[in-house]
Image (cartoon, rainbow, N blue to C red; front, side, top):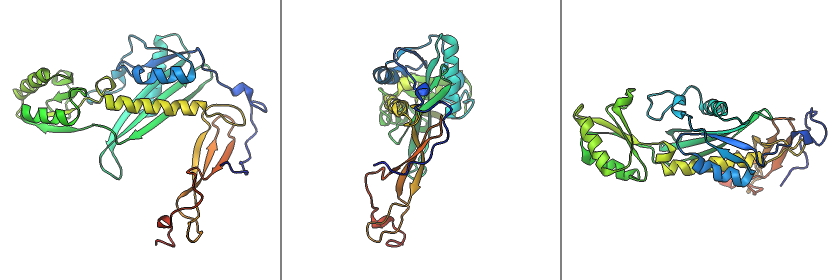
Length: 302
């Protein structure tokens, strides 16, 4: 339900109706910045929804922008790093549209379990803007452990979905020596051989899940979800100027309590905002409920 009191937009520099802002993607070439086969998750969605053609640069090295095994640090935050990847991809293929992905894993702030944040970033040089889709999920097999035997390694591997999900082994969790890191282990023979090789050098070694997308089907699904969010933003157009990414900029609390009618901390409305013309619109009851359960009321449930 849309509120009748849409906030007054700022004067648009693109003219009334804003047709100049309408972005076309159909039949444009989109370069996907990946060396870990992320196009398997991204390409089908953007091809079907946006009508773009896709290409993957052969000489693109995403490891230069950071590795999950920590031997190369990420140069910036997720969004900035994805932008750097997209810009690099456009240096390798002559195009003006690029898509890059960047993931991170960290403890969930409440549950304490592993949390995955995936960003799928689109850079449009022709129209001078960028948009990113985002997906956060506890559906991840991100784990690590110190082990001292092959039996412990195999037990760990089974718990994280081996062999469909690959394993990484290293002497020490903080090692930066590439030669001491064994990645992409997807067979029992290679796992056993690698464990024994490292145990010759140290009585205790480090094992973790390989989080690179081509070795981690669970993460690949999350990348697809972030791509769907990107497409949603690209197809959500400003009512004032037709520009993309007319999305939620603010959440207003104050949904009235079902029992006493007083405002609660539950969201009452979303405020959408256009990045290009600054038009804003308030949408009431985004969760399709007009009153809040009394359990969320500070008066009824102090």
